[in-house]
Amino acid sequence: VQLQASGGGLVQAGGSLRLSCAASGGNFRTYVMGWFRQAPGKEREFVSAINWRTTWYSDSVKGRFTFSRDNAKNTVYLQMDNLKPEDTAVYYCAASQDSSVYTASRYPYWGQGTQVTVSS
Image 1 (cartoon, one colour):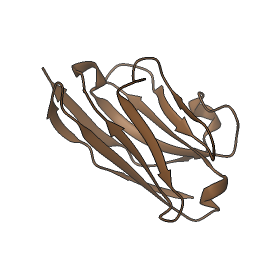
Image 2: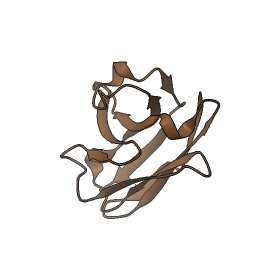
Image 3: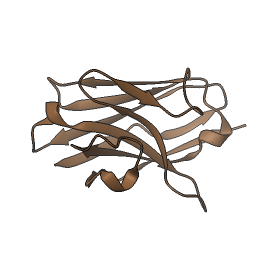
């Protein structure tokens, strides 16, 4: 499975961005798709995940981010609203067929990352 993330950028606090991740290869419908982020000097952390019926969010983004998938386009989207400076990080999309959605090491497929910078 190959993943291509896009949509990052620079935005002011309170603004919005939408990240996309296009997948190729594999049976997209069967994969759990996840978003993780990594800020400088910090560990990679879980942001959100989605399978065919459930969506999970970290407490830090719940109510502000919305994760969706379009199986017809083999693409997932992360709508990020009310962005805060602490959301600044490189965001990575990932794919897995494992049920441990919160754990980065359980995702074998990763995109290249897209930078999100939120200014105060």
